[in-house]
Length: 107
Image 1: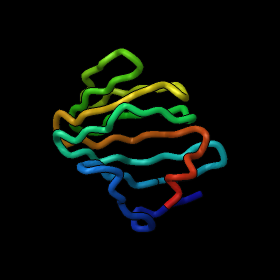
Image 2: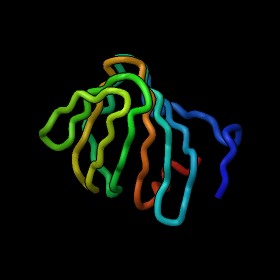
Image 3: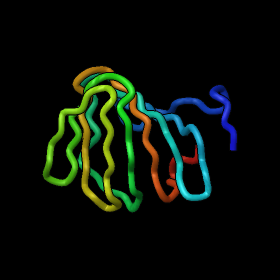
Image 4: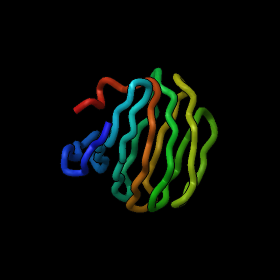
């Protein structure tokens, strides 16, 4: 599948956080998240494995009971059903892959 950049637009997930689904395959989906400084993604979990890469900025990522300060170039993997949360220390951009496909991200 090819997805041209103008084919999809950003949607607000919560205050200060926007998401754009970039590509969808049979077994996974890739999205970009833009986080404004101070934005908080509250603790949550879902049945998808989540693998991410911080393109720019700085975030605090909580996975289970561990807190990590991540900077541009850092990456992570979150197992399915693992509680996690994030806070943007600076304006940030992240790429994330979800497996299996998140049906709620098919805009």
